[in-house]
Length: 138
Ligand SMILES: [Zn+2]
Image (cartoon, rainbow, N blue to C red; front, top):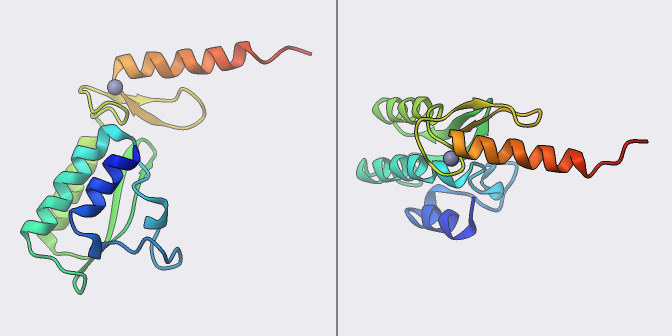
């Protein structure tokens, strides 16, 4: 994710993130998802803020892409917030992780799964093809 987007997300409530201790939290890696999912992450953080979560009862442990979907792991929160997380994770499967466009679907331009819209999928496939073309056969 672009640094300026990432910093804006951390700024929603810096106390919810441990960016130093990699044993305690994976947030030292930042938000490990594409820019296109920043609105989904922002929505969750704003919902957490509205619910009045504090450092004592809420911490974001890891945010990443796995098997083409958003994963948003926390300590604490409540059941209603857990439902919002599941909703955002479901929505990520139809939201392009690069540009945020919809509809998007699972593609595998290399050996890892990504959720991309048609335009970003074409760009990713072309980039892989261009890379392969530069490898000279022996
Ligand atoms: Zn896209």
